[in-house]
Length: 405
Image (cartoon, rainbow, N blue to C red):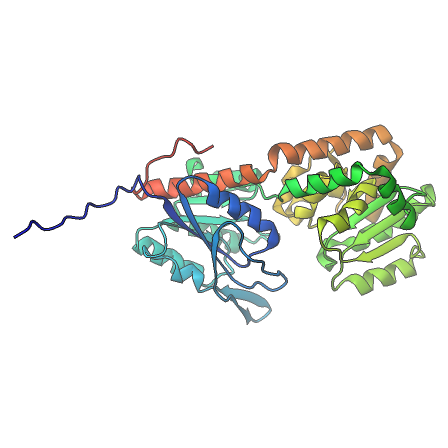
């Protein structure tokens, strides 16, 4: 009788970490992030995503992905979510480490965390770590979830330090993945336009942008972005620069109100509503024709986008009203702030940029240096990868990888 065949237990250090990242949607700007994460040695990535309203899902490129429907549930005036992926994938059959969206709006999050702990999986919570409408109960509830996780990932250092200072997590389990865009396509398109100054001059002439300075806003038109403040600041700007153009690129539910406001203030000829533009080729000449980028409040990745075009930034000074990307802005270094909600203050900040060409150039150059130095896809993924590996090590399956940057 032959001896039985003994199958050796695989060495956990010799196989990749199976990582499941759960997301509410698969947006286009996340593709480079997950593609880069999937390329990292020792990472076997699968992204499971839903269909968040207002976001168009795109096809995965360079990584595996699976769709699981997201359910929004209205309870009174509020909206909560149930994403079955948060529970379904928290098993050893699917993953060694799960990265879950960190928000108290997810009713499915706690069941998923409990299941992951029961199955001895590594858990990473990934989110803002704060709310613009922060209340003590919400903050306590959100921070209490950290007890179920091995590590947390935040979008900026300010939020990360607040978590550490609160005592909710030790510093060695808090990581930062600065939210950003893939800058390479932006740089390539911008370089192409800059190599053809005649075409850019023709674009400016055809779009009546060659007579005076240009203030640019690019984003969806939501009331929360307070684009109306820019329009309210326009009469004062026109008093100093009669040929000035305020260009608003984007569309959304606030568009009719904003257009009526421009009519009411008598500045409709100076305020250009371009509408929504898609693709970097279409939007690049507007950035390259602008003197300053203005996003009154609630700014997010549009800040990184504008900085990559070496544009000085002007936005409100109330940090808690902004998205995590506001950490890229340093007042007086790569942009200027104004008193939140104050159109007169906004006008003065814009005039400070427009009146001083040397300062405008200095702010713009510093803005570009900020994003190319700190806000890269590689550095963002470094933060995610480090958090994933800490979660894996804490469960004894994988040793530290010296290649982690």
